[in-house]
Image (cartoon, rainbow, N blue to C red):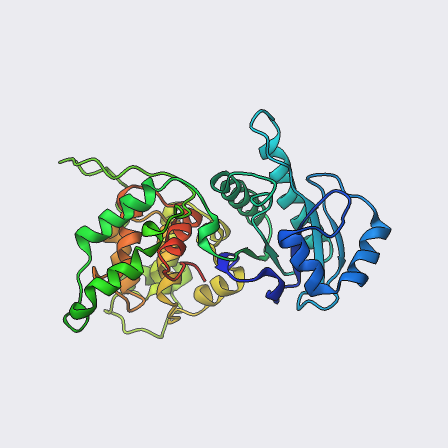
Length: 359
């Protein structure tokens, strides 16, 4: 998956590079910066940083990783947040952009970021996450790289709880507990909503209102799901010999047909689905390829299918949606709201301790 939010200690990440939320003098500091210096080897890293000497806010420099699992450390000084400043977002965005461009210049394939400036520099976590997500997604629109946003725990995020509560209410109204789990229902609900009951607000990056009750369903283009016999009438499908003539088309065949109908390019679809090019190539080249459920859902999200269409496509990979699955209900919530931003969906799945969608 090109972009993931994960809970971990950034000094333990085994990516090609990790990013240090540095100060402009590249001196050892507290928080993430101090932890990275300590784990990498204080004296060696301090000596190399001293030779570089300085880095402007929003720019980036690179050093060796020394004792870290990562080969390199990319140092980028984030902005000290001041509400009256007009360039807070511009400088923070530049931190991610400069770091990613430097990683690309050194031909790195993976990188791990902390949430820059959200600690002692005072940048509101909700806004910091929004800027980070935008910068990373903008980069991935034109480039391929595995990018991780690493958080130590979700309690450090203080943002609006409205979306969390809306999703929580939606789950409560639809969650079906299987009989063998019924006795554990109180415990399951406590586990699911423990962040909402915690003293600190759960982190959520945006606010989406609950859908207004309406007798009218939103109008959406109805995509046609073909039979294999229909696909065989197209030149590019005439060589398919792996499926019986009258059976429904496979997931791969249906996906390619829907992409063609949508007018999107393959690259637009797999980037919007947050999956890498190699995996998409496997799906494209093998008519019988069976992706994981989270990959199939991500591709349906990229095509902006409604729930009926999404269930049909995912079924062709051998999966179904159920109201005994919290993650399935969360997907349903976003689709019913017409929100197909996979990064935002993954942030909410992360907040509810569910598997992210994508590769």
